[in-house]
Length: 253
Image (cartoon, rainbow, N blue to C red; front, side, top):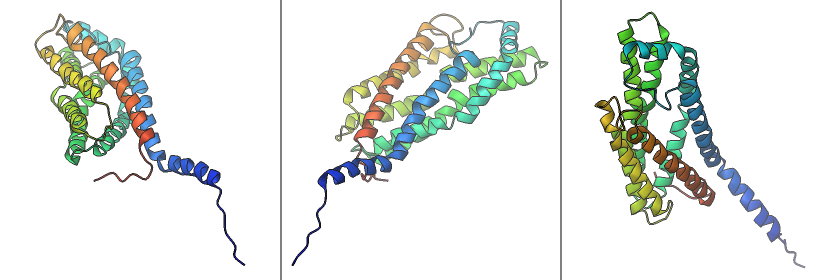
């Protein structure tokens, strides 16, 4: 007499997605830090620190001091929060680098992207925060020093160019060369426009008024609009990539 053990294919197929979902929990957690971080970023820089939209670069020394003093409390709250949550940006960059490593390109692209964005965060975000926090710390300081910190914070925030441009170039090249179709080719063209926006911000070191000043229609507003489109596309494509990535896929080092 023989006996057989039957398996229920319905049960197996129902359990497989659940197992896969558990195995990709780390990727899902990493993904959702991105929209959370950028919501916090917007709250910090717009209603709290008041550096977006940027205050005018052509202010007198006294007007710069008045700006810092009038927003001293919210600057401290906003940039204090930023110093706590800035690490979420590293999680976002790591998730993008993981998708680059899934492409049919060398890992050097992923490592270059991580390093470029990490270095770019120093002048592009932290320097601005530390400059304004330092300006608010001692309101009795020489007004010229507070004006210097005001200029330093805004020029690094809007005018940090090379590292971000390099990161976008690496990402665009990786997408163009990729044969695995992790990201669509059209996203590479949008990423190239990100490089253009970094170059358009270069004149802020010369002009204090007009479209090429740090609050100008070209240097700031056009670049910000393109960045917003790029970021929305990136979030959607990252979500799709995480959903489609096999749970047991081995990503090369």
